[in-house]
Length: 401
Image (tube, rainbow, N blue to C red):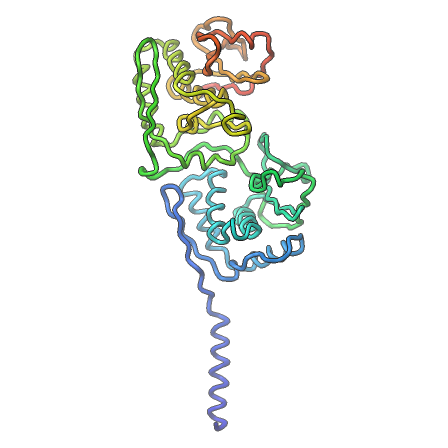
């Protein structure tokens, strides 16, 4: 081979190397259904190198830098745009993050990668999230300023971080001080996470089925064919014990609302307000089978109103939540929630109180018991075993003018 040919081949090879350096890495395309929409995204290959090292702080930091050096701008923009388009609350946005992480690294195959992807996508979305290591486990926390119970947390600089994945370890989860946070400073990850769900997602019509609910009131039988969706139970599967204001204001999805609320409004149309509220009280009391949470779930668990409609069994928390929603939607009256040591009930402010009233902030409230008791209690009556027990008013609803 003469020198001219060698020279040309050399420059051709050099040019190929230079061009490859400036050619963007083709990203892998992903697509999955998320409620009634479809989320599409692509990511470059450097982002998809899963975590495979020993689980320690140094290796987690190295994996973070690997992810941080990848081109993730389009993915983060796609996530944020989807959140804004569908008006997702933080809890529902986290469900989107979970499904995205599952696409990148299936949870069952590489739990560490799956968790670190969730964490990375949350911090790049602006949330103040942390990971901690201990007992050969990786724990994912997020800052939350709300009153949340029944899940582990830790405090850093007077800020509370709630655990988002302890349920994955179940009985293997240790005391919170077992897990040492990995020290990684992330610029812009400052936002607190909220568990408030003020808007349910849209679902496809085919995701719903009809549930027949039968209820007797004043010697008349009422029938409801309510549209219910099992995805509601999945959304709230790992939802923690939130404060009562958050809990009482979880709405129904649109299809469930439209199949239920107009019909129940029609049933009470023409009734005096107190009789209508009595109808709603009797409905929440007797339209569903009672079972306490320990027997039903093995732990304390509050159901949202839509879960109560969906579930075969419910207890006092669940019925109070549904009763509150019905009274608010139909009559929009002031209400207070009364928490006893082992029970919760609701009281409503009418134009004139009924029975023994409760005075609170200048209004008189009448107890409306939405859970079955030994006696068929009327408005203004309290169960015998509660009469001498102390209660706390844990939520007060005042209609806006």
